[in-house]
Figure 1: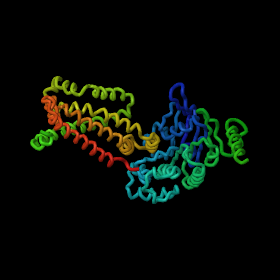
Figure 2 (figure 1 turned 90 degrees about the vertical axis):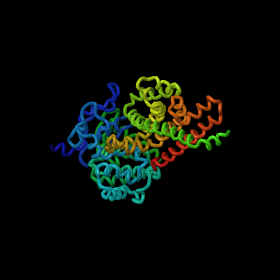
Figure 3 (figure 1 turned 90 degrees about the horizontal axis):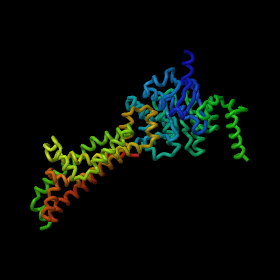
Figure 4 (figure 1 turned 135 degrees about the vertical axis):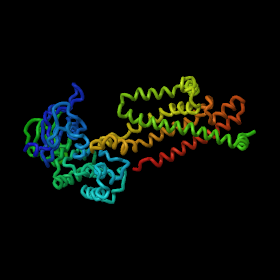
Length: 254
Length: 212
């Protein structure tokens, strides 16, 4: 069972199709190791988000299987599975009628934690994501985009799940805030040692945050690379990405 | 004789008919909420049913009210029931559509990102409904209840045609006697009831509207 111990998430020939004509993901075989950050990189429609949703069973594979902690997602109780997996999306999706504290404390609350345990946990999480605990009573609409996403991350971490899924969490932020959150997220990764799957279409972000980068294109896995391997690719789609990335760098620096 | 004189001379009768009216509208609106709210929620879970259910509720609306009251009187079993129960049944059918429609619209209108975040966090369907969807849809749902209640106050005047009482008594009597003061004796309290219902439910709406 050495394999099960090291790979927390495993795709075995997993496919997802809306119907016989429209396959969003084809025959994906990929594993995510315990404690690593795997970035799913690809353009819109490449199947990144579909891949992510197969992990917390917001979608079920139409072919093959997806295993989480050694068990197929379809064998998990969907609710139990999702409570072991933090989930952050680009639109954040904070509950607008809940305060910051209640947003963060919701999963612990439905898990039956007593209030006196939730309260310090919320405070701890607010500090962890760099928010003033005095903001606990505010509503989401009173926060800036960057602050909302910090709350989103705190909410995903609330019940201390071993796995974290992030779907372009910083995609809608202005460049400065994005860079700030990326930097802080790197520190968070090192402190928390979670298994993380991070979706992005931004190569710079992928190189910054990923231990390994899985490149997707039109529903297929092109390859899995370390950041160094990716940058040194001489052929294929990865090389195209790097070329486009370097060209953009050149234009901005000249 | 002015309508004010009439009120002063017959305070008990006016009060009694107003209370009857309130009973007809209040109970039918409550029943319509009790049936329409779950139906509206169901439609968001089973979109394939929405045409049939909304169509049915729509159909009830299209039957002219006087005719609907009359029809109930001709149905076996039903015609032996108390007239006010028949009226309440008819009024409930009329109140259903705005309540079902607004419940459906309110829940469908909740930001999909919020629902997806909730599902992804592992909320059960019930937790998602009661803690997220219904509170966020409450304003729209209550607006539907408000519409239903205000329409109900007007429609309930027709209940007098089948002997169910209410302020319609004055209106029908006034029409028969070509007496505008008598008609007004029914219309004024009904108008006040409608305004009161609108205002009262508006307060409830404000109270229940989620913060944030």
